[in-house]
Length: 429
Ligand code: KE4
Image (cartoon, rainbow, N blue to C red; front, top):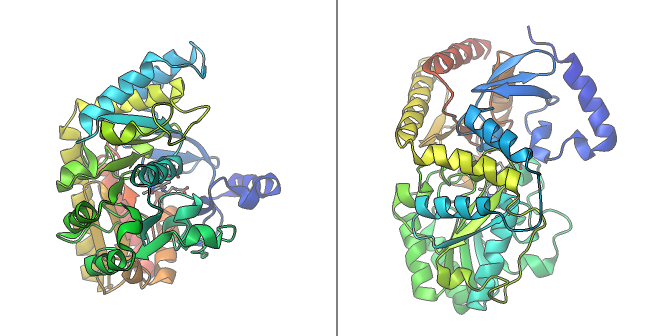
């Protein structure tokens, strides 16, 4: 039986000095109830909390830890680099090395600029698109999350929805008027918005595979339709690949789905577990960025040598092991298919969405194809599922509006253990 004494004491102390006791809202278990556990360490596919409990990890730090935790080559790269100093605010060769590698892995990107988070990457990509097109409005999709920059907190997905405040206080009406909301997988809706705002739209920003309302793959023709709308109107198409980049394939969703964006944003995997975001595009667009062009964007720790060394080690491994993606997808499909068999036997209404190494389970009898359908899930059942798995040693995302991220260190034995735990939980309901 798992006990959480030390975690609950640490949570009480944390709440005194950190708002809500966490540095990112979704970690606080607000959506699923209860109190978060505190992690002592992680290795491979396993998390170890401060009370000595271990967990099979299915969030992988919300995506970055695709190789598993404390991967030897990543840790060695960090150790070697740290001895040379941690930050200079002066260019290093490392930045060029990871930029060259990222541009070689991702389709249609000539240049890339590194920042410190996915939010910064998406915020900067929108500013670049506005500066390049000299237009002000953007289209985003309900249920998609692009970080906590003001322009995106207009019925965002992920934490903002889980947190129950889709339109965050502090976002001005002036900002909100330039963000137009569309329905994911609804091309007609996007066309209507273009008609109503024709030459004012600077960009569409979209998660090419949505991961912040659960895992919601694009409907057939959806991304191609967005591409055509942008080509016809002169708006730019921004793929937010913070989750999917270097995860769904070496070239991310662009490669897997065969649709090219104009600007692509990255985060998570590209930093190998350290704070890194990035955005890339063809040279003609990126040349608008300072110091070459007039669109300003900057950051003290952008391209930080430690973060770059973890990212470079991670991308190098991914780049040299294409079989890793097939193996990850097979493991994810196995987990999904076996969970489906168990749920069918139990007679529970469910939807299992999956693409590559991303998946999500929704207790609903309606296909989950957008934010509205994702919101119809049986949340109380989801919450008991989350806690039922947690207390049996399986750590899932603490929200029905998130995706599972499988990592390469997961073995089929871990997956079978997870399925046994799942069967045991279902006996409770
Ligand atoms: P960060 O600023 O959190 O590094 O990235 C923002 C972001 C941008 N775009 C997409 C598609 C994202 O999923 C994210 C962040 N993802 C969430 C999890 N759904 C991060 C977890 C958290 O907020 O703590």
